[in-house]
Length: 296
Image (cartoon, rainbow, N blue to C red; front, top):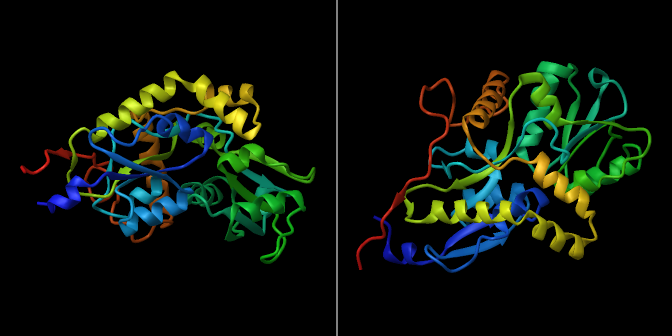
């Protein structure tokens, strides 16, 4: 049984201030039952904080879930797409099989792992892959592949709001990786979901996330208007993105898409050493379970 002090403190929740995450996090409110303590971080930092125990639950890239056997998924909620996603783009300056140096935005392990799968199974070629900060990835697009960290890049992966705002020089072509995945497999692509660090969760936690999602989807116009006023973004594009591009369920089709991605990652040993595998026969997704608080 957990110490009483651990169960009395707020649940530490990590989100991200990307546009596609706002319908899930905008209406998560501190206080309530169970009480929440909210903070936002980039996806890779969320993963690190969840591993370190400084967060209890976080909206993390799906491949992070595979890294720890104690992790549990909040059911029914994800950030996904069926086809175009717009916010995960692979830019290239030559034929894909001829690429030599590719920069991968270090913000998300899922998108980087997917890019490796695509080179193995679909595109061909074996370029040198280097992880770089989002600012350097965007800079390389503007400067025809030049960046401060090494050899010129002829391929660049950018994700998130940076991908929506990217301004590449005319030498680049680009692919939407959500479109590539769905045309190839016929399945949705799941990018992130809520992951609980392990052990029984306080009663009502799943309900908090479900209610926040329900309110967020009902108030997309408000979310987009507030963001447009704050950042000067195009509200028409924002509404189209949230209403028609991004999906927020985690239903059997999404689970099948996630499972197919894991199968391909395993086939190429891209996540070697992961404690969760399809081959071990256990359910790939294990769900968060809630437990009543201990008596006073």
